[in-house]
Length: 382
Image 1 (cartoon, rainbow, N blue to C red):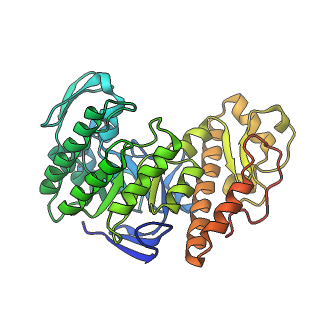
Image 2: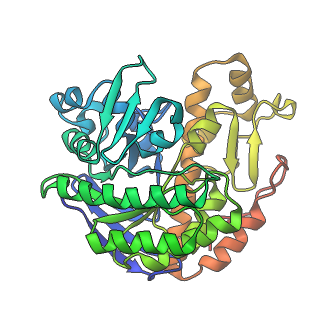
Image 3: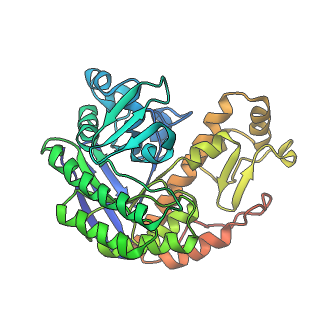
């Protein structure tokens, strides 16, 4: 399943503008992909996503392999048909679960033996099997199985995980075939810039459709995070898409775009929506606060999302405190629209050559914790 990437503006480092062309549509980059771990973006329908400018979603191979099973999804027409989503889909490989479910798995050179968190049954995932699972679901972009060392870890463990990830990436590429999804390699290496560059160079030598940066956002120092992203950007091909995995505060995205990243995903907009934290151009609104009990304004004046067009802060606060299910959808819709509007503004700024001034205005507009601040007009305009 071929994809292509057309870089319209930018180079190895610095803000870039591009188009990712897939069998299920063209995606403008930089792009943010909402997380639909189990085949659904929590609290939202595909129609909600389409209405609010989402162009590509992410699902998780590990979770869908366990439930309902990739063969069931294949039998029912593939993941697009199964979840009713017409646009492009990227599937994570389950490598993060190798990291996060440490007490339920054992890593060897051959693959990962783990016990299901659902029923305790044992499964063995190899790089080849993970590619097969993603191929059977008919996704557009698949990720290689990798090993992510916890942070902090001894240097020898970080290097061992990185080198194993390189070997697994080669096996994944051998198993991918010409008719499967586009395959992305994943750069590991902790916060060592030299290891990041070395890993990227090995993956580039193998030749993937795109490249991801994994193993960040695990507690490392902010400067180490930024330096690692820069090192990867310097070592990756100019003409291939770069995907920063799992990093997703608005500030993270702005800084990663500044350093040459193209694709992003994170659970923050959906998770925070369900927890009552709403993103705006002027900081976060925590909807349970008493100050909103009689507030007739929308979450963000001027916002074009369904929630802001129809409902007040007072009503959303009432729903949240009453634990009415509707509030999870309404909050999530707003947060996803915020993220998509942010990405659209970033693309406009890159196209116009005004990213630096856009970023300055973006940061001026954020007054974290000051929920009654007045939004700056044009805060997303560069």
